[in-house]
Amino acid sequence: MLLARLRLLVAVVWAGSLWTVGYLVAPTLFATLSDRSLAGTIAGSMFHVQAMASLVCGLLLMLLLWLATPEWRSVRRRKVLAIIAAMLLCTVAVHFGLQPMMAELRATGLVEEAVKSRFGLLHGVSSVIYLVESFLAVWLLISVTD
Image (tube, rainbow, N blue to C red; front, side, top):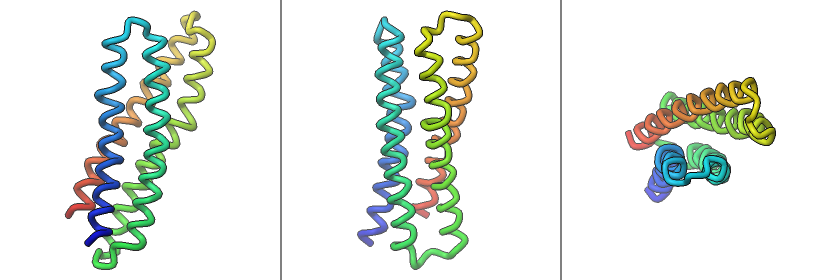
């Protein structure tokens, strides 16, 4: 029972951190701060912390899935594992794939139109992946509480 509650708590922390940073903190920074560069820097730091939290939560959930779900059917266990793996893949793709490319472009000052366009494209792809991960988090919460 305790491990089941811990599993739910980790899933809630993971989902909550995704939603809070992505849909409350980052938009608030850009709406509040007049310096968009500063807002982007702070948001980037927050997304970094959130990505590290995602990795920890995902790995912890996999461990709890392995240790604390003897009553689950193997189909359910595989489904939850697939959701966790997909969420981790989203995190890795954005944080270690797209974010470094965006940071490199941002370092150029985003002066040239081609650079701005590429940054916008990468930011859009990153946002879509983040949205997918956010919906996967809903599915994860539903799946660990069934």
